[in-house]
Image (cartoon, rainbow, N blue to C red; front, side):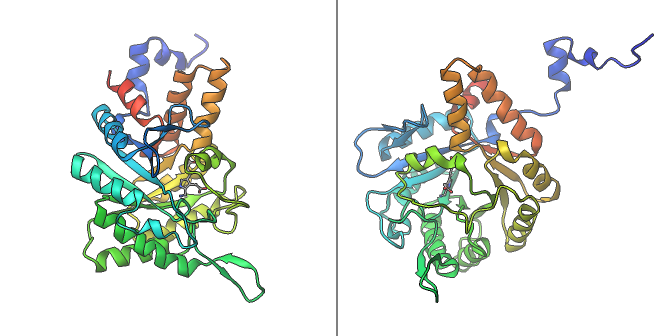
Length: 328
Ligand code: PBG
């Protein structure tokens, strides 16, 4: 009797839908990005990221404990230094805000969670770029790729020394994964992993993050981050990072780049991460605040879609909250 095929049979009850769901979302797949700042005496709210704060060293430990208790897979740390200079000296200073935070988190939690660090200079430079600047033959300021690699190496060694399990080079300099891998191995950090921000686009979705880290950037990052128009370029970037020794690769942002994520997942032979970035978070918060969308449903839908597109691991500012919700 017509219709011959009735796909709705598999949608009849919650139990049936649960049985046939192709994609799952589990706490262990979620990584919480966290900010730790100098010169504050109490956690400081970030207005464009409701519910996210810049932490003090003390409040960071409390929030990290809560996230670990909720079952998140890892923490990704960003530092907000009190002092910035042209080469980002705070980045490889063992007493710098980020390295201090990594050391105290590792001392407190050991190997109970996976401790990740953003390996990039932009939070530490006074010009806000992800690399160091130099002047070319025509008198124009450029982001100096190879001089930046040396700074990333110094930063990576400091972060590994401080206790990070995973380094996340996010500056999109050519050769950054290979340079960091070689330096880690030479210094005996053979087991420190690299999560390469392989396909990172120059995106307007990073707006709230710039507030979160007090960025001084003027202009843009279009000479190093990728053009939203390009898809094949991501395959090239991922292939290079895999050849250079990346242990995991990432696509960023997530929601607007699900096509890229799918293709990367299809070719990668290592775990694939995606970063639901600050603007993705902020847009959902803003629409929910107006009562225009159901926030809880939107959060789960967005994260499930990122998983469905191919992410094994999702970085999201909702990691702890969603992990707690999923475990209940
Ligand atoms: C660079 C970095 C950025 C983000 C993560 N790492 C900013 C940028 O590239 O401009 C953005 C994350 C977000 O928007 O949530 N260190």
